[in-house]
Length: 141
Image (cartoon, rainbow, N blue to C red; front, top):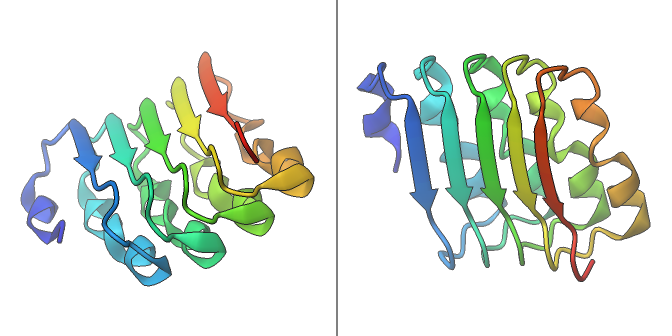
């Protein structure tokens, strides 16, 4: 679906609105893969509300972002996706080396994350010293 973006090497800002599209674990795993070579990307907004990403999909969703070191702003709207505790534990792991990340807005409302997921959710961000703005919505979990 995003394959044409592979050639947009100068793309610096991208907003994807894919709410209510029945995107499951398989789709989540491959969705952002075409962005792995868009090294100039500095701002990403991803709206995946009301899909079916689940625990397995959340393990892989953000993996393609790991090499995009210019990312400074990420907005993730993932409410109502059955991510649960296990998925929340590893969701942000691919962001651990994004040293230029200064703003993260994360909406995980209604995902049954519970206590265990909420406790470890932000652990991967501890080394991101440039992170100056963090918005986290864990309502109804």
